[in-house]
Length: 100
Image 1 (cartoon, one colour):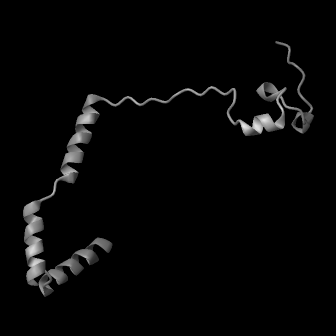
Image 2 (cartoon, rainbow, N blue to C red):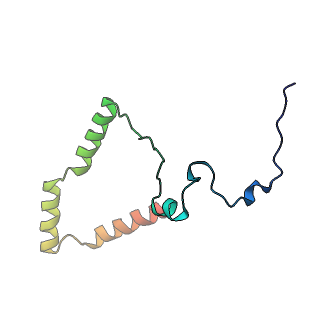
């Protein structure tokens, strides 16, 4: 069996002096310069060509505006025929179907 080192008594949490990299620095220095002496790596993301292609297709489909439909609805709104009792009843039925 290997030797086991001394187990701390628990009073280490009561230390008031700085330890590690902060040792030897004044409180003002360590507080005014956060992250001093800390080296951080950088994250990277690799996206496959297939994923880029799929994203481009989805973006193209989502931004396509059907000008013919927009023009037809605009004309119907201007003429007052867009809102009809039949369309309103259909919209209400669809809404009630979606919540039940």
